[in-house]
Length: 355
Image (cartoon, rainbow, N blue to C red; front, side, top):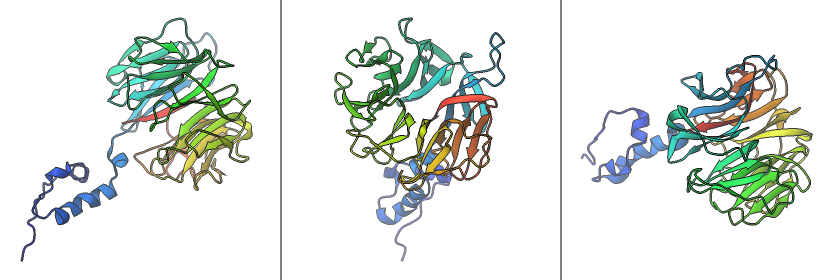
């Protein structure tokens, strides 16, 4: 007796996995759904997506003041090739994207905030001469009209995609802000880092409370993609600080990076226990147990001075690292082995994968 008649559509595995579930035949829903559910397990959403790696990089090796600037600024990696897009700019330090239109990027640079639309083909400066030395930026994933950027004199926000700006650091003791992140589950909650530790706001920056690392300069802040209450922050000399209570408090996380500068954090989107950090001296360090222990993984890197690291959401275990004025390096085994991956002679201060 035939229970259900097959109704295959002949598409690729990826196409099958991304079909709308309502297209599954209804006569025998459980049996018909099994191939669909199996493909979802084999190809979860972050592996189905097509990702582009964006790097904010300056080619500075052997550069002499007054010489022509080598290609620097925003680089996009597509089809295993790097492309320099937009202006030749030596001081782009951070990149983020509009979640409703990932072809529109926002760039924090030494001379202001830029919107790079149409796959970075069209650039518009969104700030004036009253603000320079931008350090970081963050876009509200629930309301992409809201953009924050950290700069040498404070923190600014727009709620209209850059048409107008409001300064939020006027009531801070020290105005310099190096890092900013928005809680993806509570967008009114901001975590910032500057010269005097980590600060938290629960009201979109109207008021601030000390959250930890008092007296230490903060260099980077990241929130785990797997656990919204788990945050990490790197410092200049004091190592790594962690929060397990949704950013309310941060505590020192051991000896890793103490007396060194830690510049970068990356949570592996494909493995909730794997985290990478990077800095000068430790190079690349990996945790396979959610940050409890760390192992330096620099075999194959020319030097242990690393500006930024990032895991590839589309390839489990793939990790990129920018080594000071050497090259971008890639590992397909979470840092156990490394090989060059382009951008020779560069410093990539930050990287981000764009869907």
